[in-house]
Amino acid sequence: MQDNPPPFLRQMDAPPDEPYSNSLNPAPTALALKRDKFIGFTSDEASMNELRMALAGRIPHDNLVHLADYRQALTILAAMPTPEIVLVDLSGEEQPINALMDLADAVDAGTMVLAVGESRDVNFYRLVVKNMGVREYIPKPLTRDMISEHFLPLIGDAGHKQAGQRGGRMIALCGARGGAGTSCIAGNLGAYLATELHRHTLLLDGEVNTGTLALDLNLPASRGLSAVLEAPQRVDQLLIERCVQDLGDRLHVMAGMESLAWEAPCNPEGLVNFVQTIQERYNFTVADTGARLTPLARQLLFNAQQRVIVLDPTLISLRNVEKLRSLPGGSGQAPRPFLVLNKANAQGGLAQHFMEDKLGATFDAVIPDLPRLVGRHSGFGTLAVRQRGPFRQGIIDLATALGIVPQRGMAAVSAQPSYASVT
Image (tube, rainbow, N blue to C red; front, side, top):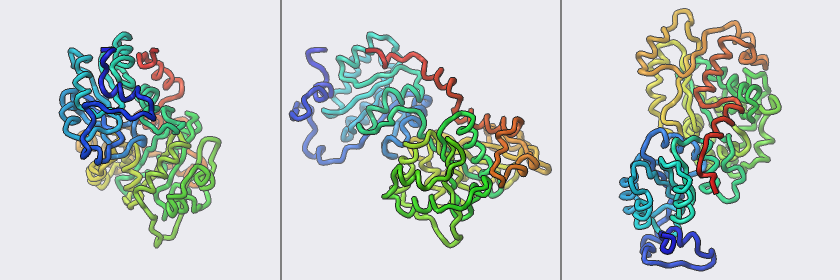
């Protein structure tokens, strides 16, 4: 096998300035087709979800990770122009080395091949990476940290300095109805991430005409977000720095209060550029999209890695949540939105167990009705999450459900053994 490696290995090892040709080169008509950046296949949903979350924002939205076993992946690849990067799952293959030889017949020369699988044997890793042309291999179970460390630097652009580092995640919160408390939860969640977990966090108010988040935090109205939306082609780190307001060392806010007649420009490509730019700067972006589902809100919900639906204990929230659940999401989005019950046990409200029965799911976090506590902080620039008690615990439960843990916990996760680091 060392004397006759697969074609994707031979092409990879050829000098960059020397053209390479072999019998498996694609036909001229295939060369004329535009190659996708990436396509991935995995045989289980848990791995697919981890890959989608880790790759969010690093690949185009239409370059998906698909749920398919190895043989199904080969059939799909054989019938399409091979993308630049292919990720395959070797799980279930009795002869994974022979399987990789079959892959050589299904992909074009020059394709970067990444692989995951069940084997954790060091010798297997060395064989597939050094002799079989696979650029990198990760054993299951996959975690986002493993994917970020070993796959993202290869998938991302060569000049992307932050590929593989933690962060860069957008969490978009929307209300099942107006008054459900979305802005309150968004503000307190962002403050918890920044002050308690020490992550650089941006609070983004998608309701540019009302400025609810800015009012809750006692910040003056700003045209920062409006300026960014009006000139998305000019968005860079410097512009972002000029448009945010500081609420602490690690907490910044981008919010405004435009006239009701002003409609936020919402070019999808421009917004993707904006989202990618802030992801390079901040570990987390917490976006308050409100309950009106404006075009801007829809784009933020689509581009977020995680969506959170905030309900209060009313029939209106219960009725609207299914519509919000059905909103389309990008390829890197979590497979389901997270559900938060706010104002639980409010007088005259629906019971939690009744709502969960109708939803067919349990709430990811429950925040009790505490009007005095919340009212004491809302609009004064202080935050209820800083006071120990059930409200703070509800915010912590939400962060935990989103997979956000203290730094030492994340270090423990990243310390799981991976033979992808063996040389």
